[in-house]
Amino acid sequence: MTTLYTQKRGERTEPTHLSAYRLMWMLVTFDLPVETKKQRAAATKFRQFLLDQGFEMSQFSNYLRLVNGQEQFETHVRRIESNLPDRGDIFIFQFTDRQYENIVRFSDQSRRERKKNPCQIALF
Image (cartoon, rainbow, N blue to C red; front, side):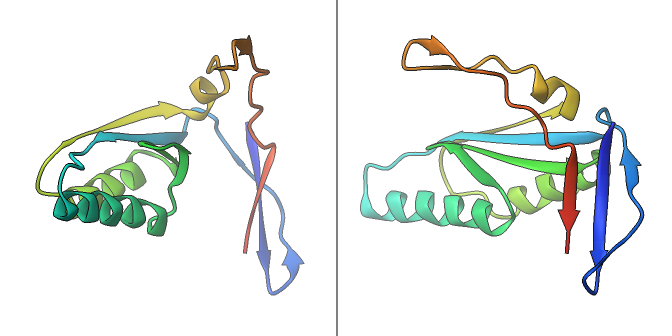
């Protein structure tokens, strides 16, 4: 379980417990053509759109975002669909917060420690 704390006018409210199986991560990965100036501009515009929508870049063509359930996931999929570039491939993956915790990561030929999900999220 993840504990969600909210703040209202500087006061911290009672915690709300959310299931790690309800919280989901969206992974948007894409391969966009960048051979012409117009294609590079379209790719940059798409990456900027994802950042504006609250996605965080994990690698150059991989963007992550935490969403609260299937309905919010579908909302973001529709927004992405309405802002697709003319050409290229885009994949959207979804997995639970619990599955995200189990991602195995290698960096510089060594295994990195698992990322621990935050035990609390503060919303303002």
